Each structure stands twice: as C-alpha cells, then as structure tokens.
Length: 88
Image 1 (cartoon, helix red, strand yellow):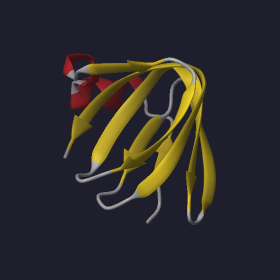
Image 2 (image 1 turned 135 degrees about the vertical axis):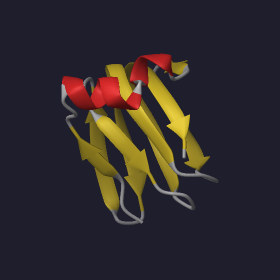
Image 3 (image 1 turned 90 degrees about the vertical axis):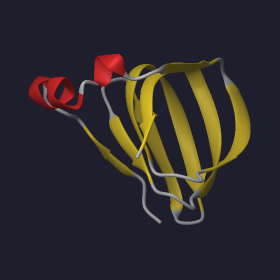
C-alpha cells in the first residue's frame, strides 16, 4: 500500500472544496495509526514522517496526501501539524 503525495494547484483545492473539510491538529508526538477508510488530506502547516512496511515518507505544508484503506503506519509529528481531511 502506497501513500500518494503531491502539490495540488489552487484550482484543484477550490474544485475539491478543501476549505470546507474538517481540520485536525496534533502537537509533536509519535503514535501508531491504521486507516479503515481512504483518507485525503491537505497539510496547512507542520511536518510529519510516516513510516510503513515499505519505508517512510516526509509530509509537510502544501502537500496533498492520499492514505489508502488498510494502511498501518507510525506517525512521527516533528512540527505541530494542521490539516484539512476527508474520508473517501
């Protein structure tokens, strides 16, 4: 299972109505997480390293991230994170 990360255009953010999605925040910490649904999120601020069986990815401000259903991972929040998110 692969985490997809890319930098969306302003037009894509408007089309997806990202500003209407809920916001989640987390202070620097480490925790295990499992995705029961696909999650799409847009990082407003912060930095996190997500570790999976396949390796690790760094996620930061301006990234659009797609976490696949069934993914188990470890989050290492390096800098306080704020993100818009929705389950798909």
